[in-house]
Length: 277
Image 1 (cartoon, rainbow, N blue to C red):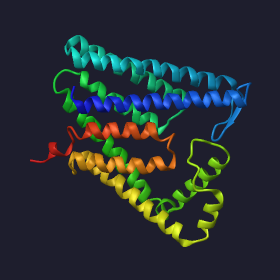
Image 2 (cartoon, one colour; image 1 turned 90 degrees about the vertical axis):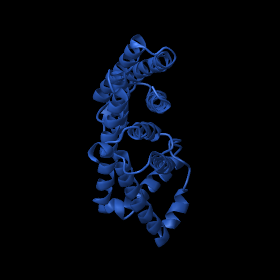
Image 3 (tube, rainbow, N blue to C red; image 1 turned 45 degrees about the horizontal axis):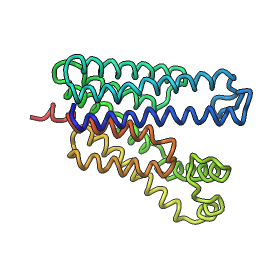
Image 4 (cartoon, one colour; image 1 turned 90 degrees about the horizontal axis):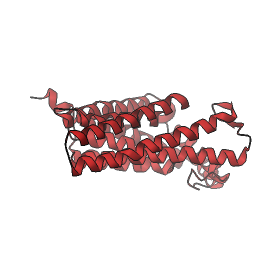
């Protein structure tokens, strides 16, 4: 296992543990405000009291599975061999099963899909033969699909390209932060945002940012195929996801970590060289 593979595994651990910590924090917050566990959730309606206990149990199970990965990685790097490889593969398989079970019980969430893809790509390293190439090609295909689909959808959305989605997010974040929700940065203030909305500058900036976001995602999709060198790909990815973190610094970390892990693996064996002489 190379340093690049180890870095991707660390990003996977960050994504999994951060996501589980968010779930546990949400359950604790709901238990504090709704002692009977009967709470209303946007898009879900009134949830039964057992729902949050189930989510908490699933999050703790995923954390337990994730805890086996560092030990397996250390064993693989210090004493490589069939036993270490099998242990590492079993750890990845266990973690993948736990993640898919959590996704099945909590609904289809894009972040969970990205984490599952990264787990699968890393698990391919335990296969015999050119395992590194298999992991890189797998990551290249799915990372390219992830970013190209996202970029094209944004380009096809008039509301996004006009900057409306970004302005909506700013308004939502401002209201949530003013209400005491620490998931969102306390800026802009509702009064400041209200004044800015009366001027055309904010709409122009939002439209420019929307176009830049769509262009960056399309570029990352092509880069995952091998059209850009690895340093340029990772630099663009870091800048893009750094901008995403400004919108929701706590909630988007698992998705950003999993996506960066996929891109990191994609740079090792991208798909494009297979089709070029």
